[in-house]
Image (cartoon, rainbow over the protein chains, first blue to last red):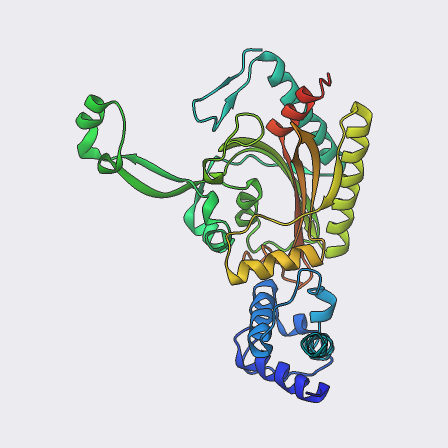
Length: 90
Length: 265
């Protein structure tokens, strides 16, 4: 799975959930809190990402800085999905 | 010592000596808050279920909640004869006993156009804690000196940091051993709450000052950053940058710690 696919996934998850207004024109590098993402929405988003990729973030992997934009979330997911894959293969 | 605790140790009544300790500790942190520019509020023990709901309390800490019930009008004679109230003779109300002092503050700020503010209050707080009361550090009914900070995140975090330093300086001055460490709330176990707990730990949103009493670590103060958790639902985040934080000093635990280490203040 490449980073562009992950970005599309994250983009879809955000738009299809109710965590930001439905008519939002979402840009990958804009801060999600500018679209109205709050702490309740962030928790929902994290759960949806965990369900999509079938893994759980650990208690040191949920740095708020990594959840600021579609791009930053995608980089984190890419790193963790890759890491999980390496662990399974290793 | 004329202190008295009830049979299940869910509360404690203090005599003169421990009342003096509790009041002295409370006055210390009340004055620190006032020196920072805090204003004082007075809040009741009861809180409406709607406020708890808006604060998200039912979903996060149902295990702490205590609801108020009153005698049924048609059951007064039965109650008088039986000398107690039971399920058949009671009606539950929509009032609860507040499980956190700061929850009363946010409805008072509703829809205000705030830039920064500090509020302090002394309150009775009620947490059930699954009947694990010990009559020393864990009560159903206890007292908290609360300080609530409202402002942008830089301001609130700076206030929390300042008070951490002042509190550490104070325990050093009086000779009370203790340390401040990252912590998380005791959320009811659910998928959402597990994520909230991890977010707290990953981002250092909560700190506790702990000391050792009878070989156990006991948190005597907590320092909490809420982000927009309260400012958003209560609409005092009009600029999109207003957040809150709070500090709670658990006064009975401070008294227990001072007594354990035989510290006179």
